[in-house]
Length: 348
Image (spheres, rainbow, N blue to C red):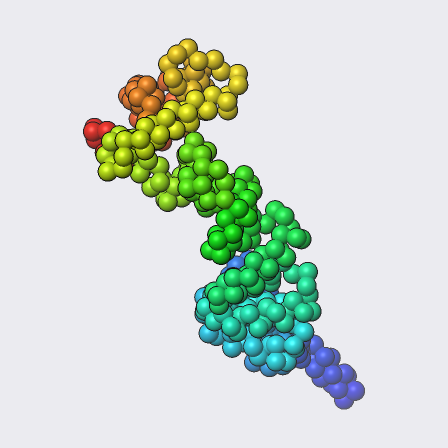
């Protein structure tokens, strides 16, 4: 009987998890919460792990990540610095620390961490990208350009790096290089780069001045929500309508540029034929392509086409049976913008 009792006690002791095992369980739980984006729950589990095993580096690193995700930057920096003191080779922790320092705009400290990471892992593109941001913020424009070029050497499709590099090139008056990089990013769909590509063509910075190309890029940027592009187009419209103090030759040039832009829209639809109504949108409507017609008509009306404006009014009032309901929200949005700009009288 005594022997059986001793065996039972031993088995019970073996079944009780050790503090280290419980800490590992909390660590796994915390990391699972991070993967699901539940940062507050992750922080709670990871703190429990550290109470059981204060030297558990993975838990401290993950806690720093969770705190960073929660926006508690000071606490995140504290935990992550504690991690890298214990594990100087903890690259992931050091990267998150650098990100938190960038968010705090502690550029000098962020730069130190990033440069140390890149000594160990020169293949980390995100580290080079963040280093470009930190260097630029410190006024090291040449260093920022170098960091962005290193990103693009490994990933030519990293359009944010290309756009940032173009901005810095513009600031150091390397206009030809800047325009080329803006244009490459714009062609890849980067909205802000499209605005700056338009500006380069409008002003002749690094490229030959071409107002039609500028208008084209500004329309693309405006359709992606870039306010500066819409403002640039609005200023041109005011000039074309004689509401600006600039000389008449400027007005004539802008009027012609809008006409040329509208004519160029036909090239996007080589299957369409004009019947003299001056609208690509009208030709699309004749083909029964009402949904395609609406955004094109809005572009044409925004480029001062009166026929397009009249077609939009008809579409808004009547719609197209089976294809487009009356009072379409996209057309209503255009009318609201046009009225705010003074291009048309607001109507119900």
